[in-house]
Amino acid sequence: MASLDRYTCEDVFRRLDAYMDRELNADDVRLLEQHLETCATCAAEHKFESRLLAGLKQKVRRIAVPSNLMDKISRLIADQPGDSGGAGGLNGPGGSRGGGAGPTN
Image (cartoon, rainbow, N blue to C red; front, side):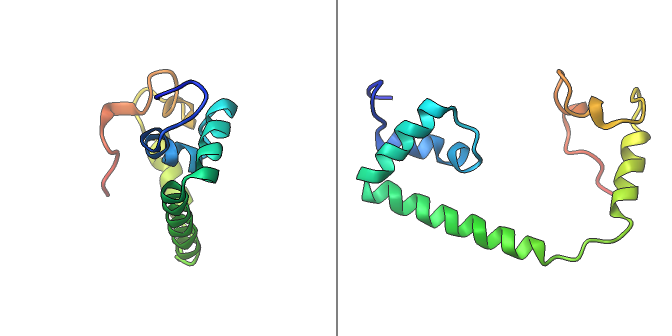
């Protein structure tokens, strides 16, 4: 960051995804929003990404999910070695289990 009291375009681009996911602290949100108010380029990028995410969310809501999907996921979680059957071990202090992408079936 170039200064403690304002963000550059580079600062905004580095933080834009976290901002849109509401993962920034209050100070970062304030600085990013101040920059968006004064920079047409960054504001346009934010607008583009916002519309893109809204469109994706709308399309995902229309996808039919198999009724037994939750049962399959619950069984896979319960069958994990060293797990007591709950999901708590998946995102605990050690992060996701196994370091891989998970089951592929």
